[in-house]
Length: 344
Image 1 (tube, rainbow, N blue to C red):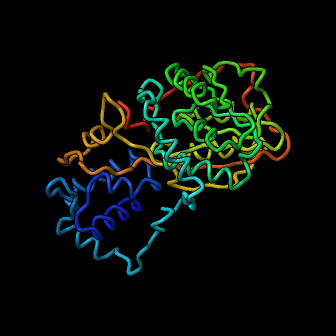
Image 2: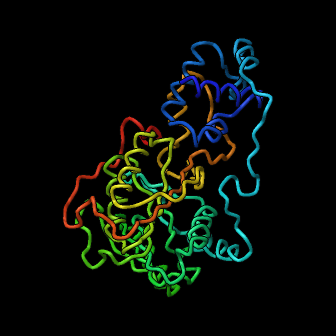
Image 3: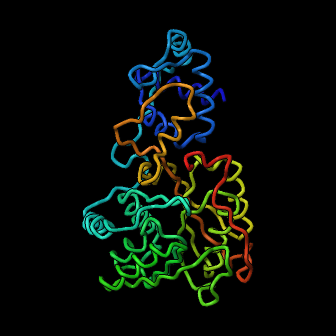
């Protein structure tokens, strides 16, 4: 808790006043949301932070605290790549513009499946990063859950040999089928629930899989486990994982899972993918968090992409070991009541 306190006080102290979503964006790669809320409430109770025109500020007691812990050294992150290592160059700019146009009519995210759509620029950064590893050209790629419509971005490159999408949401399945037919994309789309047995015709057929797993233990196990079911020898996996609603014990769990599957993690890039937090029609994620605070703040009018995901890449060393039996049904829990605190 002491590290969170220092981070929060340093951030507010340097800015003098801060919007709540700006603070969340700053802390996105470091702490779970439930821990941030807990610490903020403690700082309010201890009269270290206060509210001024819906901004967080330090009280006199807070300023005294800040003067003791502030560092003479400031940290600057790259303003061009935003710490993601990937720039969208001219070669991919045209793909980005086409992608933005094609996804305009996508179905709205629904809470039933804990959906959330990645910013379009970050989808393109994902395929650029995949291409840097030669994981696109002439590859067979399977996407397990395609809320982000990564399959369309891949098809626009014309690099993969085969693109297959498995998704539980009929709306997305139908949308992708319409797009694939209209633009003659080589995307095969199947309605599929990962708790069900894995399709035999797709076993060990793919060079690469990609997913954005549910961040429950069962969700992590099944999304990544089904991806490994699909991989050929020396296959590659890509997935996103937050710290905001997936605490480090879950990171350790999935790290061990990959190791036991004969895999090795090659890359972890924090904050690689960001998500619009107010994309749901029925509720506002920021408002849900504000209700948990013991300080009166209004929702910010400023668009801040404070919900972020870490990109993880791993490779299978030789043959994959299936820890999830392809022929077996498993129970899937969609929501972690302890950690998924932005979902009503």
